[in-house]
Length: 170
Image (cartoon, rainbow, N blue to C red; front, side, top):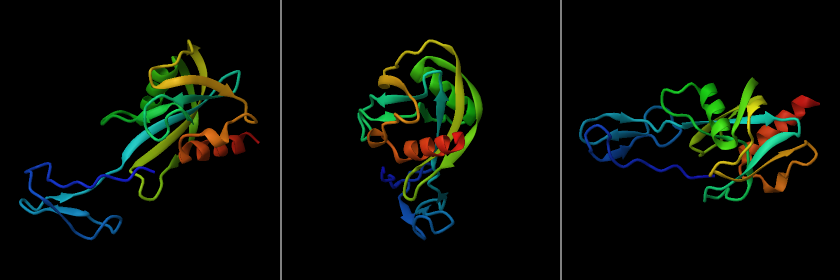
């Protein structure tokens, strides 16, 4: 899991930040030493989609150089400020796979201790477009539930979402 970056300066006046109660203690974890502004570390929201095609569940082999490079992940990414989460999920699928999807539901919301992202996972079926990898994917492949490459998944949340999805199919 990625370790959160601790802010050091106030976004309002540039003053040094002082720790208050510590992370996860409730209330603002930092306060500006100059202007007194309380500073929160809000989580970043990401959206992903379990896309069902005629061939199976769509996964991409991650091309971005991070700890998940070369591993299988769900199509998805960060939600932009002011963007509707569902629309961000649909946009990410189109950008990363070339497919248009019909959203079929909310699978679940995943968050982890000391992990700075909250992941909202939807389910969808492909209903248009042309499958093609983006620069973010080394490869795109559909897997039936017996073929999911469990040992090659890039994120814990991918494994949790796939297990939850497959359990719902049973």
